[in-house]
View 1 (cartoon, rainbow, N blue to C red):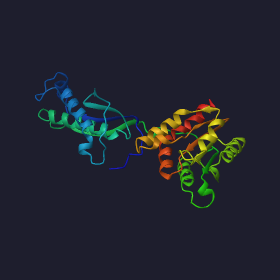
View 2: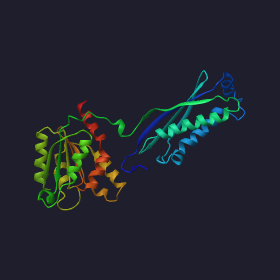
View 3: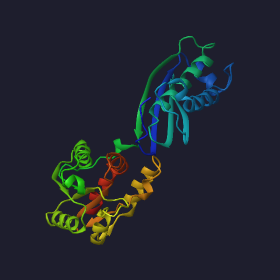
Length: 298
């Protein structure tokens, strides 16, 4: 199965359809009048479809078990065709497209099985996904023109004793979102130096500045202490989200002292210094945090 542990829960929806075609009007009449020998076709097939939706991961090997928060199965008759429409919702890390299509398929098969004694020429066709929503695919932002900077706050890296990996990882992840990094800087974890750096980036009209390192509890972890007094509009939900995401994956994320907010028109984010902390914080915040630039423009 595909690893989805890095993803976040979100509301995800999918609608799938299938078409069942009978060969004569008498079959449609028997369905509507509930005269099919095996029982009420619509109700029996709906029950089977609901079970199929919930059991999708049992029969599709790469599907993850997930909570089905809502499922609806509806029918419409057009001549000799019955359109089966299945809608599924979940709040989870992955979508429900396959669940919806599996439900539609089973509904059609159950209908076929119930109707075959009275109609030998039934056809099932056009099982397809009509729509889906939720997840990062819905989060599209015009970010190619953002001016961004990455600042590494580390005494050991600035002295050349260690190689920077965290800053480079942030640059790599930004590039995946088509955001180029205009400035990449390595500085010691010193309050005056950090404040001087951010003031220069603000003066140079940077849209986004990400600091990595110095968010912990050691005596030389000064990044939040340097940046917090300069923030004019705090966005506490950013750091709350990052800490909550990290806490679900390791027990020490609550100790991160990261801060986030705007200094004039510059969004300042503070990431942990470890490569794991960077990856988790980026996964927690991006791309949805980019919505702040759309909000600020309006």
